[in-house]
Length: 255
Ligand SMILES: C[S@@+](CC[C@H](N)C(=O)[O-])C[C@H]1O[C@@H](n2cnc3c(N)ncnc32)[C@H](O)[C@@H]1O
Image 1 (cartoon, protein in one colour):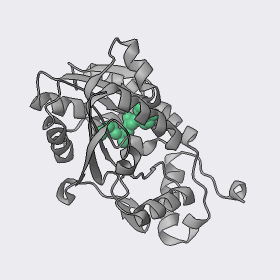
Image 2 (cartoon, rainbow, N blue to C red):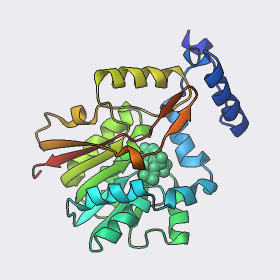
Image 3 (cartoon, helix red, strand yellow):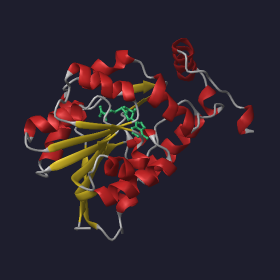
Image 4 (cartoon, rainbow, N blue to C red):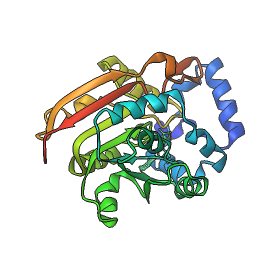
């Protein structure tokens, strides 16, 4: 049955028509979500350079997030899915001595960052967060104090996230921080998973505290709601959604 369901191309016009249709009709329940491989290709290849200046902006949300990471007083940080490195830049402003590393799937985002001097002291590696351990070993780095993601793990399916989490648990010395699309309740998890499987979205909601709870390296897990006043809201037809809605800080015991 799933194969007979609707599919769309990624063109802008179709995307806009689709969004109009899902606001006005019951069509969301008929459509099938794209596979993860489609979305990973989208992030690796399709996103346009015109999006990079937006990612480079020093928003209140980025500054708030940087404060949360900086409060851990890290000597080094690694962002999975850093795009042009604006989070790294904001952390560097607060902690100038911190070594900054970013792994990003899209090599044009890294090139744009370097051309525009977004985070000149950061070291970027092109590749998938699922391969983070090998990618960091490739540049001679075994561990950093803090590994973090911001609106990036949400674009990875469960298999990629499982590899990224395993890598984070090896590479992070003191903490793993996720500012992501977090499930605060079983209902959130069910609703947003059903929503993803029913129409166009590459947002995977996840129980981030549950992902880490019980692991032998985990000392304690903090959860913090992202303040509403500084968060974004996106229209997905009849619903509004915020991409990131939770900050999860996983404090680690020495490995
Ligand atoms: C919505 S952007 C967020 C960028 C940045 N973290 C921020 O907070 O502004 C998602 C980023 O994650 C990257 N991404 C998606 N899947 C990835 C993967 N498997 N490994 C590394 N980066 C990935 C995308 O290329 C994109 O740059």
